[in-house]
Length: 254
Length: 315
Image (cartoon, rainbow over all chains, first blue to last red):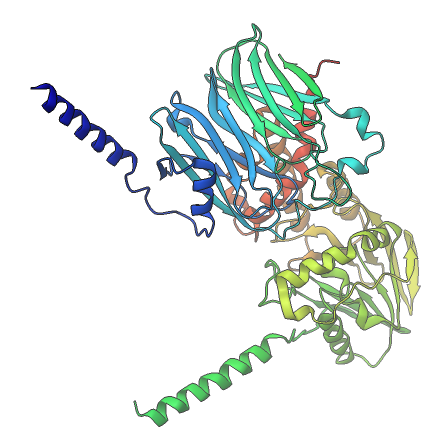
């Protein structure tokens, strides 16, 4: 094969790969008027597929729109996941989390969020091959979760408790479930007279300081954030947190 | 089909549709006598929707020598008015007293039809109505729609305390409980043995927990009620019983719910996982178990979770 032929073959291969990457994303499993907007905004036009192997679990309706439990399960792609984004399409503040499992943390996350009205929910899972795998569901709601006054702020002395973390480790087969609840009002700026004040950064490290995962949190996360992770291996896990006012908090789950 | 026939058909359909639409908004309450002087208006075991107008609740009344005692007023003004008309088909005696078993909207939003009558409730229930009444009313407008037209929260006019009251020859024992909402009233007619259990007892309809202080409190209330000298048991939702089966079903279901949540918390399960838990076959006859499990996990699970966590922050 001549060099020219080789280049042509390489180009053809590139075209082929691009063709694969731009393959038909499949049919959106839910009805959404906002998908095109969000895939431009968050996925920046990168290739994606609607993928039922990415499980996004939520109740069919929000019993409490201020504390809606969602679970993102991309374990079908364990070892290949570099980043997970989640958002609630019809929320005034749609973004929920940007989760980057680095080491020993499975591509699984549970988190509680606020929703303002019935909405599609999305989890976009980026694998090493550069494709976003989109898990989708919808949730019904009476509404008002984002603009409801904080429950935390009605409790006397709540400021004293900011940054307190309750947690637990629950052994499962092959990994352990780590759960934490952090005392924080997570003010999203949408309640009159109360400026934004929320936790926006978190890191998980092992006992030796090795980074296991990073998270960026957004104000769609419920007050007193409740997070769950699945972590392989034993030993203490350290959690460090930072809010947008620069307060630092830390915890260690044995 | 000729054009004329087609137009005829369209006209007929229009008439039918408008007749249906009109008929839909009538509750057609039929009082059923369950014991001497005692009548029940039994709702369905469904969820609120635009077909049933929220008539998913049991209300009742007792015709005493001095007048009628009403227990709960239903989900809307229209229901309250229909209830009052239904009472009029049974007796000419005036309504002299209303009791509300608790603050939930399906039990109290017919109050407007009894504006001329003393409306009694436990102090705690009155407080909850004051605090949450408007939001609860709005929510019913959302789920049952036009049936609610003109409905507004009307607060109790009288605070009642546990004890025995006499109404025209009927001795009514008021029992204060708390398992369902924190302020639950049950009423035993000592003359007839009819026990109006309010929503401490659901039968063949999954129990609801939005304000429950917890399973154990509720179980204790069931013991209290079952120990009373009752012959007929009127649940807040579901069919009347003359035996203890509703109590057994309640204990069985609450016990299962408690074990499910406790077991889930011990394993670090998240809410989104728990709401999909299998529901035992023996509860198959109970209406709305999945729906209410989803709600109960939201209401009750946070307390179970906290019990399985410890402080881990650097202090």
